[in-house]
Image (tube, rainbow, N blue to C red; front, side, top):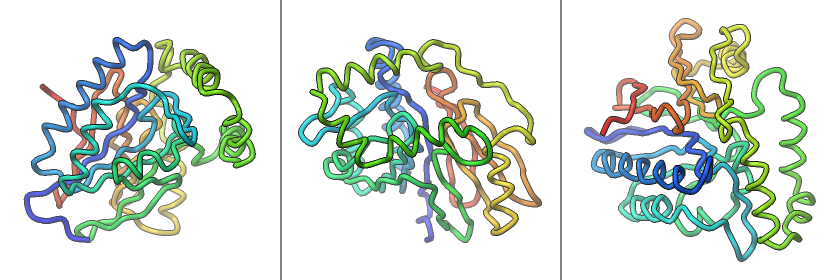
Length: 252
């Protein structure tokens, strides 16, 4: 696919809306909307790379309260013709058909491969990829199980959403105990995964969320691994201008 001249593709991840409290989450949501307003004039495609919400469970006739500024802005951008993609993450894997139906976005649960302007992109949230983290991989399979989802949906929303909010407040991103130290290429699971993929197929860019440390590293002979970081502290995003990808910080 060729991106029209003057247009760009944007990648952003890990807003974790809902934590650590309503006031600070709302402040962050407004900042995200300001960023969307800033890029709307030249955006062809926007990729939301997962963990937009720190907790989410979508009942058949109910969804968590809040986030109306972000959801309304995304719907407005989608209606204007901007293509929007949403990857589920480990915090919002129970997004189902509400956002695709109401906003018109495309939902992804697994990594995808795209080609823009003759450059190949490997895109995903990043959770459960690479070696290790077997405990989480088991939990992810459990949460992705349709029977488990059906059973959880039997809880009244007042209880179910409150339960999710309780566990969300125990997460490292909510408590401020998030470990965002670079472990080295030989210990970073997503870098290991990217290098394993490169042994089978070439990609120019590997772009992930999940890992809360912004990273832009050369891997292989001519590929780049990019992690977008989170929007609690870093406020980073990636921009493809048709020629190259740049990792940038949102400045107001």
